[in-house]
Image 1 (cartoon, rainbow, N blue to C red):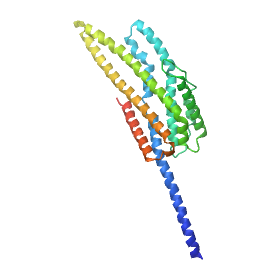
Image 2 (tube, rainbow, N blue to C red; image 1 turned 135 degrees about the vertical axis):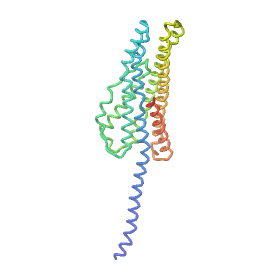
Image 3 (cartoon, one colour; image 1 turned 90 degrees about the vertical axis):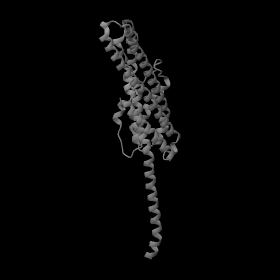
Image 4 (cartoon, one colour; image 1 turned 120 degrees about the vertical axis):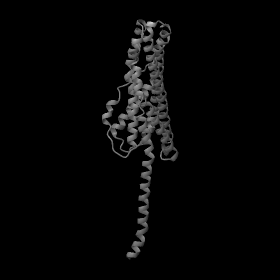
Length: 289
């Protein structure tokens, strides 16, 4: 009888063991597939550069002021007030996207989390600004994103649904990234105008300073000109890298949205790995001199 019982039990134990191993394999595969999601989200949240460029945009007048005539200074002060009035809104967009990516990364992980303290990072709302290119659709997307994050953080998303987060957030993510790209182009254009203003003064004045008594002054001016030209060259490169990075984030998130049912596929994992690597390379370029 024992032999008969063992004969019947053994196949069941084998089947149970196989199912358990299969379950473990599925879980591990799921974890591995989400590793690329987590790394992409981490790289997106840590891209950097944008906040620095936003501050540089805000502080344009401080750099221009010593070079301006009284007439030009009056207009520059008016532009300075406008820039400072919208600066917090511009930064709020970045903070919201960073918080989204941080939340997505944690959802893709295997540990519990508490981001309730980060709710304070969400702004109270944005204002449309025709001069900056910030449009009503950007405002609507920002509102939608803050509501999504508030809901996710408050609930803890116990089911850790990365797919739900990406599906619910992608439309707003894309619109907000578009806003950041437009704003970065605004920063770039403002910097170009600043560069023309400051370097243009030297281009005009130095050729006419031909007296011997001006020799030392001209030499110092040329050194200053070279330093400023180098500074603008480095900043131009930062704008280009920032635009590349924001575009990579948009493309990576779009690919996740298009492949919600197969985030564990080799193709999607490879794509996210490539995007994450590119973002880390761009971040290194933004943090370098």
